Amino acid sequence: MAGVYLSYPFCGQKCTYCNFASGVLPASLEPRYLAALRSEIERHEWRFTPDTVYLGGGTPSRIEPAALSHLFDAIPGRPWREVTLEAAPGGITATIARGWWEAGITRVSLGVQSFDTRELRQTARKHDAETVIREAGVLREAGLDNINVDLIAGLAFQTRESWNDSLDHVLRLGVPHVSVYILEIDEDSRLGLEVLTNGPRYGASHLPSEEQAAEHYEIAVERLASVGIHRYEISNFARTGFESAHNLKYWRLEPYAGFGSDSHAFDGAIRRQNSDDVARYVDLMERGESPCVEQTAASPRERLWVGLRLSEGVRIEAAEFEELGLRRFVDAGLVDYADGVARLTNRGVLLSNEVFQTLV
Image 1 (cartoon, helix red, strand yellow):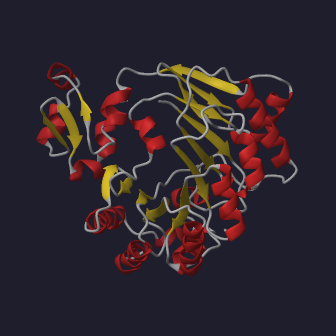
Image 2 (cartoon, helix red, strand yellow):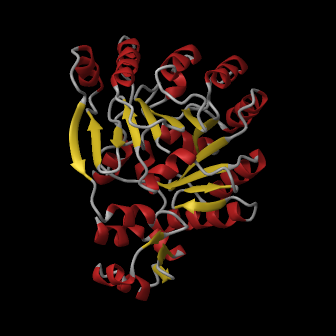
């Protein structure tokens, strides 16, 4: 089965670590964007009936529940197996949560990142630990108990103690899915640019080392596994049966349609990307033109480096394994290869980019 991704790039504030094509945009653009998004869905020629829908961004939890339902009306296959909404903690009320449930949302991904107030201040996030705890309860009371919590290892001022405290909060919440990302440093985020230019803002001079961030990640792997939340993908951990059905499509190279600014789509052979300029996307849609700005054929090797992200690994014939030079990663302790299946080792997960660069 295939999936649907909806992009909503509007945010109440731009997080300092964020390198996505999203942010604080003119309020007048939001209703036009919603209309354009609905129009793009309506124009789509459906070659499959999707079984998952994922709303990412940005902060799609800003969309009114009635507007969400209106978008969903244009997508075939309702009710779907899984419908995920990314949400920023803060402002999730009983009325809103109930509206999400009635619109068809089945899973909520909370962009928590940390439960430590000092770390959160440096990210520009507005919530605190008490907010997350309260709103997780609100979601559950509305029937939305399939909750994911995002955490970032490597934030400014993060210590082993503060990281373990964040994990303590996660374990007490009892959510069935956790995503753990190691902080990325690049020029596409305000924090990344500050680090690269040796600036002092956003706590750039107080980031833990790469080794410390990797240690925090490994602590998370161990502590989550101790309560039955196991890693099934490099950054994703779940109790059995609570893996993200939609995101698994990306790693298994299953098709999905993408709608909205900077969205991507894949039909099994061709990848397509929409314009990441929100105003341009809206303008193209209002003129009746295609918002797609790039099409590329999928590489035959894609299934290998994408599949290696999964703990289940990826099947590869011995001849191809040797031809690609992957044996050296076995010798280096980064990859296990047995019975025709290649998997990253625990050490290989931390150094996965070295392996992926060989395959891209």
